[in-house]
Image (cartoon, rainbow, N blue to C red; front, side, top):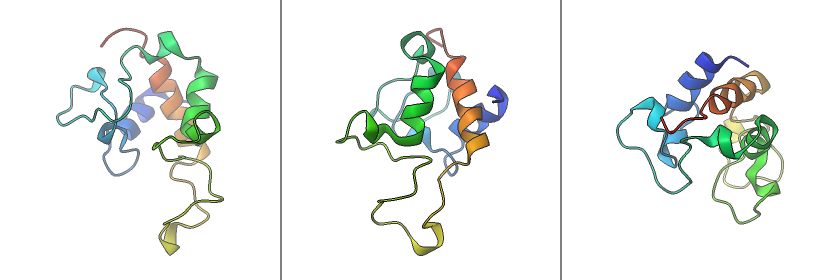
Length: 108
């Protein structure tokens, strides 16, 4: 994956929309959410594979999660017809986001 592209996806409030739930100090963006854990230093806590799994489908780890699956397309509810059967992020975008998040080893 490409960390620069991943950074843009994570920061984009229409594409990844990660900032609605997570604080990512490295982005220095306003109005970051606190529903999910801070992603500061996430690479110290999780491997790239663990980050990838959480992006693809966090419900495999925590069935009660509020985090949407960014790649799973089956067994979803309340999906607009034009988005049914389509992942939020494609495989390359997932890898780009993984590359960016895997670069966040420090607090900023």
